[in-house]
Image (cartoon, rainbow, N blue to C red):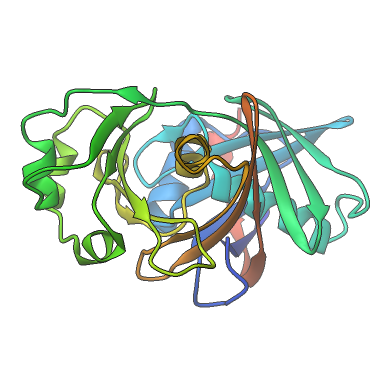
Length: 270
């Protein structure tokens, strides 16, 4: 048995930018172990498996080392691919059944817009190793949501210059660490970087779920509900964010860069 897959770069319009996700379309779930093996082999920010069950589309996300509870760029990539190949009506939103609940994607104003839950942080005492691992002696703010630490620093250049000790960050009990600041240019509200070595990703390129936190974080500080953000990873990512109560709408673009087929061993079927 073989299944179709495509690499889709999310939160970018460039084939060499954004966050790569490998989207695999399956009729039935292969074993979890096999899906994790595929994710390790692909070594992308996310490997996404989608299947249609009558009128529902179910979706699961894997990093190279773990199954993920939520993944923005993988969701955006899957929606883009399903519309591109004609497996979903581009004039209608797509609703996904996921571990994070019901998530949706729609096309609006030339972008794909995801409707995700807000991931609100609370002030937190940083673990002793956190700031030193980031190469920082202090921070303007440290918080924690249910997935990640959030560290605000004093300016975009500090975010750009970070050279974290990835092995030390991997030992901190958290999915990841978001580092953020106000943007230096007037057209962007804030910038960030995201490190998740505990999930097998030293630095993620464009992280939708991190912006479910950052959207609320900066909306509160800047007094606005629409924000423009950039992720300052080597590949970069661009976001348009609308905060509406306990929901965050993440807007971005995507591009398909390759397609192929995977062979599924017979013994791995459920």
